Image (tube, rainbow, N blue to C red; front, side, top):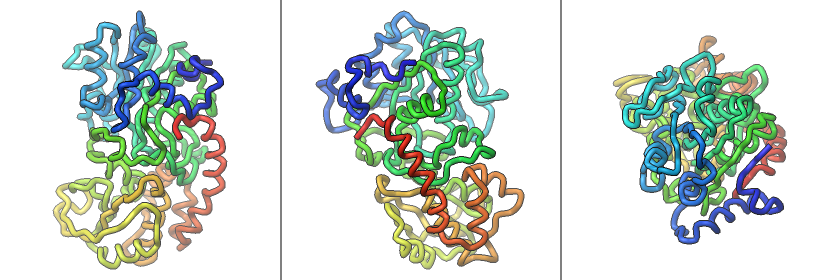
Length: 416
């Protein structure tokens, strides 16, 4: 099983040196910003797909530092025989709402056939579509949360390609959360689904390329995998430090701040009784309701001393979604340091705060409990919150799981 084509240059070189090895082949690369796996690939490694029919899994986040789409780069390069596109949730062009089936057909710009990965009975490429290609390239920006579907599209592509005998190339990209912190429960077996297809923590502390390495070995997917690393990337980097432009990764992730907050409010959003900024200008960045008191809530949450985050009182009127056109109060979440921010711990702390100070207004209805548990990966977190446990007690319940995961995860890391 091939793990990483750069390993072949020096099989004894530590995994964390792979990114530095890639940088050595790009001596002109400035230190000012991160260069993505796409840029490394286009600069030096296009030859590995020479003479092969290439399939590409991508969406609007697949761009280089100048915002040129991966599709256009591949289509316009005579060295690359791009023959098919594979569409994840939200579509190749990002114009499909969350949860809606993505149609196949043809891409209107390139005329290439588009095979949907989000519209059939499963979320993987069919044998018929894989028969038309020789290698599958994956280039999509992730947000670092287990409940975001792009990583599972990648995993399902890897699994299908392992069966079909097709190699997979993952072009690595930064993790907006810094690829440092591991936080939250590991998904229990009965809750495995497409927002948690394999047992990993809610926040897994890896880049998408590192996660591909992990899943391929630890979950025994066993595909012929190549991960093209970034250069100049360091663990703990904020998105702003990468020097890369942010392209909305889905309709409600318009900024890197929304990407960071997604893992801290997404499960709260499942309740339907709290505005998390969707329908306003700050998706995933707020906690709001008509019955909240932003000033006191912000003071109480800041007093907890949660790492890497501050809370600010906010008053707003959503344009759509929860509490549409109603005046509501609450807090805005400001991630001050992604390298120390613990999104799941923060989310549970918020929920415990709501349970403690708003017992009459806050509840998790029976019809919302299943979705909440699926997103959290177990039912014990919900049960503990409703019984009045502290966020520290709940976070302690997953600590041993995260330590065990980290011990397995560390051997697949590429960056220091």
